[in-house]
Length: 84
Image (tube, rainbow, N blue to C red):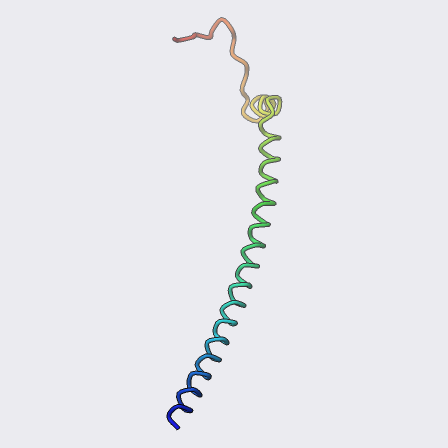
């Protein structure tokens, strides 16, 4: 009788462990899907930032921005002093 009770307990505990493992696996899969979606969004944002950086790094655009928005002017050649 004690043997049957031991086997029954082992079977119940084993089944419970299977249920817990399945639950954990599903939870981790949902978390993985969420993180994959976040990764895709971050990759998309990174691509947009790379395009924006490429647009801003063009010398003509920087020169235009400096002249119009910052009211900067090209220095007069005679007033420039080079220091070595």
